[in-house]
Image (cartoon, rainbow, N blue to C red):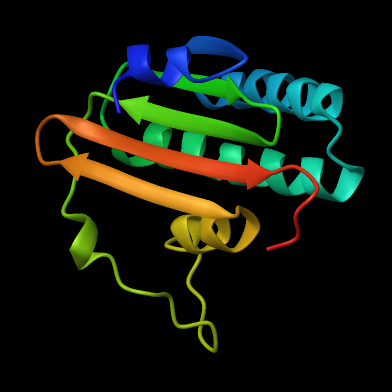
Length: 143
């Protein structure tokens, strides 16, 4: 789905282009919190969404080698869709292993955390052309 197709199917869409610097993750967290609150998500769901989005942004900053990244919020009647995109180095998604939760490492839990907090997650990555993490949280549904 292209960004134009994404925008056509939503009630509203908001895009943030951020420098790949950690100090801007808080701004993105505040933005998604405001959007989710306005949509009617409860406080626990809002916290889950904020953590998932922060993890996706932190992964970009840590691993992509991109100077900036884009966060696109698609606001629907029944769901919030968030796309975090970079134009960095990309990676082979199928080579990412599930973390060993009995012996967790300091890094490597980001994707696992995102998948555990959001209702749907899709990762599209191409070596040398970037990565896109699509996350969906449904309103009023506990999946």
